[in-house]
Image (cartoon, rainbow over the protein chains, first blue to last red):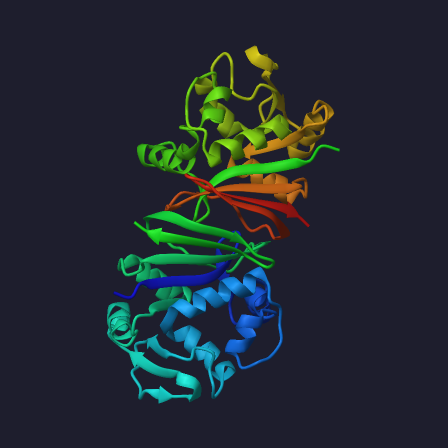
Length: 198
Length: 198
């Protein structure tokens, strides 16, 4: 069965994002910005060039494993205009939301399906179309915590950026879990830590 | 000049310790317990045996670099009875405290000096007797944050244990810093991340 992988970027003090104000956007960029120069990330956006770095190869290997993705409503609302007509997912995306709406089809294999049955329903629907690939849960924080709390996450992959943010939204809440580390790779812009949830 | 190294164990969600109750002690053991089986750690306690593991070699290499240590009052009060007559430091220890008292001499090279002038004075006194070694700041959380806030920390070494604690005391507070990752090693019981403070 497809694994569910929680894969997110965090600062060394565990912050996954900021608010929607200028400071929050600067924080987002500091935490997530390590991907922008990567050749593999740029290819997903339909852009040429970029660095063929350790980070780029880690990102490419992770993306290769992944089919459907599950995102939270806030992340969807934030990202939708940026993701454009040929979004970087190239796979079905399931949006966990309280507000149901019609499925949206985009180019390049991306579709947005709005799931009102919670994280469990989203995982079920994503697995049904995974076709041998794994399911990625790239955020935001709320959906990540829901997935962990429901025991639905098989692997946690953290891209840790070399920053003490000192403010913002911590990825992890009051959920407890035992993990097993299976990989630790130092890239140019982040350390990539991979864990199995026990 | 001797570097000041903040070196602590944390859970993957950034928790450095718990309270003094049973749950807090269990949490302490879950976060710090990776050291107990190590041959190098046991040797510092005057114990034989233990595992010659990746973790043990990382611990030994770190300890080799370090001379004086700086600890907080709470950590001292907590650890003093356990550390015994031949404490595992084998070097001068400076205790940051509001309550001055006479210096205590122990066997095996350990002494406890009580510094009431704050973290700056403790670093100055530790450097004065470092004799080419680095100065280790092993905790607790309050002293670690004071050292970071005062810009006195040159390196941050985190031993990250595979655990989402979900409660307890976060190592990092609202301090901001840019770092540079210089090493990431996956051991048996922890991932060892080394950063320079920019």
